[in-house]
Amino acid sequence: MRVLRWVFGVLPVRDRVVFASPRHGTLEGNLRYLFDAIRRREPSRQPVLLLEPYGYHLIGKLVYLLRLVRGMYYLSTSRLFVVDNAYFPIHVAAHRPETTVVQVWHAAGALKRFGLDGSADEQAAERAFLHRHYDYVVVAGETSRAPYASALRTPIERVLPLGTPRTDFFFDARAMGVARGRLLRAFPQLRDRTVVLYAPTFRGRGGARRAAPGFDARRLRSLLPESHALVLKAHPNLDPSATPTDGYDVVLDPSTEVNEAFTISDVLVTDYSSSIFEWALLRRPLVLLVPDLAEYEADPGLYRDYRTEMIGSQVTDIDGVAEAIMRGELDGAAHDAFVARHLEACDGDAAQRFVARFLGAEVQPARLGADVDDQ
Image (cartoon, rainbow, N blue to C red):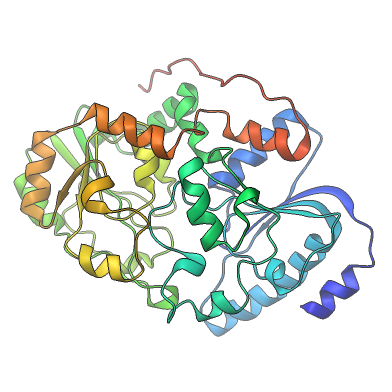
């Protein structure tokens, strides 16, 4: 890869924007909102998409290696290169000064320790070479700057609180209405019911990822009235077979955008997922099922003290989950304080601010779409 960096380095740099991700094979999350913002500003511009998921088996690794050759070419010959996770070509060697590399990490806020702040034993590869050579990192707000600077090996003055682009969705009533209508048409049994969404993160890393412990959907279903619907949204980076599906009223495709799933949800049950930050923008009840909190605090570790700094109701078993759901408690003042502390730059204009900062476009006021009838 270093040889390719040298070979491609003799080619001219083009005024080109590249979005690269090893997370999914489709455009989603922060990259999708930035892509749309650029196309609105310059309809003729067609950013290059390098959406190249990593495979843990031999064939998957070989295919990924071949794709990285293409990635190194575009990194070496493009003006702006944007990623939402670790991307091997960036970290191999310093890129050309004419190129700007921006990391828009896929999580909103800083919750679970990651990157160089993860477990020293499990992060040996990261500590050796990953998360080097970012020019800038974009975060949700001021409180995320220090954790992201540490985790992504970037000077704090280059960690910019421009807002998380994917949160623009929650300030666009039309987009939310369209997503809600689409999901309700697909799952009409959810209409006129209180929808409880279970959307946890995973445990472990790499090929050893496993489902979160302690959730018994059948037991919870038996404790909830029929007016409530129980919906599963498994983590997209987890093997679907790793999560039991018995007991749910609806099982969403893991590739469904969690923010879109939020449009049909009245209560979120999760654990240490960074989607907590985005859910907080909706100011709806939150239940945190954390039976392994002490273990999780030790590895991978948390940036926040769950016992004192988190919103929602914390429980350790399914009976506690059911009781919290039926109480439906929401501390509005605590939610407002949480949003102000962690998401102050997430106001519907995050993608536009990014475009203004890196492509020189004028920022327009947030677009609040009209409500859409989801019938």
